[in-house]
Amino acid sequence: MASVSELACIYSALILNDEVSVVTEGKINALIRVAGVNVEPFWPDLFAKALANINIGGLICNVGAGGPAPAAGTAPAGCPALSTLIGIGISE
Image (cartoon, rainbow, N blue to C red; front, side, top):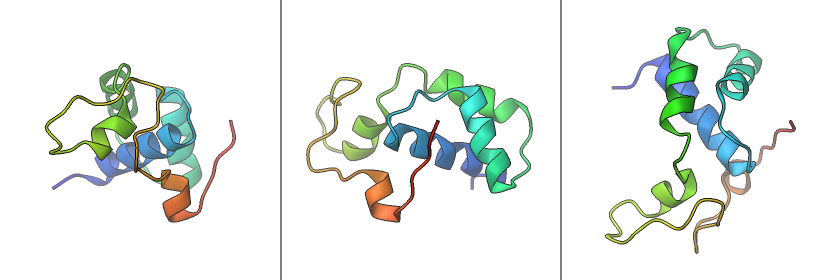
């Protein structure tokens, strides 16, 4: 099971991806700080580095699809924006 720190970083990365923003350690830390969550300091950097060249939307929408994920920067077909689903938004 994921720890609170891991979940905070995962949700932050999803929000940043949905807002078409680059996932960076600083942005993850900013979202976590606003949420009032305490995380071990190595998690945001770890997630930012792991997701540096990953198309998060393609990864989510093609789980088990058996085909390649869409190119980075393109919206996966048939996959609604996360902010549409949960009704939030962030500004940079």
